Length: 294
Length: 294
Image (cartoon, rainbow over all chains, first blue to last red; front, side, top):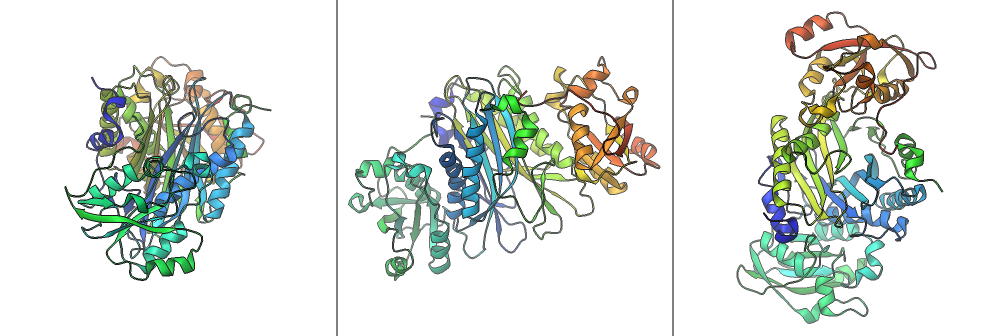
């Protein structure tokens, strides 16, 4: 009998989703950054759920204002990855009775700061206890929206498309992972002005995330490691595998005018071409990156 | 400095929701069974989140098929409590690496059985690990819908309204809590045929839940303990405080014809008047019921 540690996260998810009914109206269900639902409104409804576990994603000694910010920002980053924006949040906190009230209040303040910054609101929640000695678990679900014209999936990449990333990568654990700004405005500008073929956010590192995007698009990829934009003091290996950059990874067939326009609008954020999508089974393999059960 | 165990769940929630932005378009946010959102569709959008914690809500030795059923059924019961039905689920599981794959697969099968029974689907999810020795936490979020005419809130009760419950109460822990059928069809029939003024589902027991409904409606209440419908072998005290009955508790001004019509449609399910809403500060106090941090 296998345990979860033996099979890994991607394999676990693909087994589990065969065991439940999956949607008809849902255009993209489990597998993309968000579920995308055509419910007859002018845009699409986006749905996303995410979790933070004490001792895995944060330590109790971490600043609860920052942990709260991150809890919300991670989900907003997934909406940005589809070209969308957040709307309403549902927050479930499973906490030990011994937790200080002060901690959870500052955690909520941190969440509130991030919701306010991005125009989102709390719509509901659940509080419950975990047994003493157990890790706290915080689960965040949210609705978002994206206009029909600006939706970008992981699966639209084509052989020959250029691969680009925003920002600099690597070393997020030294602080950026708790205070990052999800790329909502940048994604809206990109999808509003250029014909992006595929996009996702970099949560687990290029080494994990780019193969996912390429696979969803039925492509392979080539990357120029020397081009990967590095955060100060980081190696290429760190930039590829550290994860939690929460930058945008996207592809498009034609980037004519993109670098110049980007610089004029977002002068403080790097934008870098790092490679090319190629035919499936060509290109290269990347290894490393973050697997939640390995 | 206070801990969560010292302040209790209702008090915790009312403090926390002052710390984050709360919705404009949201008609009912934190406090009712679901959030109710007027997003311009023909009906209202319902949002709900809920959680199950190993060692608190279920034991690892419990049948994972039944735990999966319960995880989904609890949320569906909240949609029923508004007169609505479920649509799409987001499932987050935070699990120890040592958990058997078999357990989680059967848990998903159980969830799938309940989704299929009620016409709902999985739209997305998240898997992550908890440190070894920590309790597993399962968080379920969902969207639902309700027609504009059939929405019933907790807050619409008026002094003089009759208080009714479906089914029999008490002793759920002996098995019903893992296999109950959420009252979706019953709630749809009630809200389609009678002018219900307030409704909720009985998750924490009448002793906790009826005061919440009365308070939300700005009323007090009187209850006839001898009228409370008991499950076999249960005392009135158990029926009032055990919780997890997942029956409907509702109020209405005029029940003319209700018992007779109900019996013809749902002959196997009890329907009982247990009391009356009265003016605020009149009526009685109930104590007991389930508080998640006490």
